[in-house]
Image (cartoon, rainbow, N blue to C red; front, top):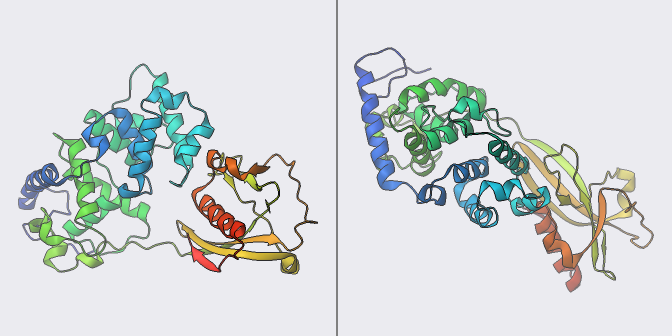
Length: 370
């Protein structure tokens, strides 16, 4: 690891020294920038513990611009913790559909129910980590923003900002290793007098200015303290090795009956992350079975490092094709009722596309991405 550290760079070592005096300057400049430049987001404009919890659950693996309309719809439907706690899971999942990573919705409801069962909300990050779906990052965010707990958050934005400040070029073997390595430096940099604002400020800087590519260094309040900027290495820091892409092929069965205007969907159950949602039924197809099916469309989507190629097929002889629709997970649903059914986002998009094509008499086109 390159440990060159000019007097104006954020110190990598934890020992005291002349460079340690730069930490107050970094705090002051970052908080000043945040006060002037932060985005006006609903959970900031009308702060509440409930709004903070909902926003943090939604922001896991999701960008702000994507989750904003979901947050606004959510708060209209569930304006307070009690309304969410008392709602049926199916209603919660229906409102979450399209946002992905559906276990977040179930964990959010479970966390709110636990919160309401307590005599008072926890005030420390350590206590929040006992809640369903709440890890160290979210616990630090909730506790610091809502209760002033001086616990630093460490996410991808924070890793990037601190790595560049300190000129850390050595590769991390994984994101989790990067989190472990950066956490002590994030804790030392955190402003204990304003931990909530500071945590939001450093994440905001990573999201808006210190971005993964084409960082806006001229606009950065920490540029005078940044070793990566001085050495012109911003674009290569941090270096995090990514897991290799895994390719998966899935066949989905299309069983639309034009006469009754119904479609067969499969309800996901058990411990599946999609539990409570409907999808087009998955079906194993061996090479010898291929002549029995006609390909309607192929769509590719990526979840984490898993690249999934979804082949949507229908039986060549639909009249004589039989599936056990009395099975507890298979349901023939009127097309008119599909909007009221909880369906995973990509599948709803594919269903709409195929229904439009089939009812118009045109054939589906080949491959695409969702």
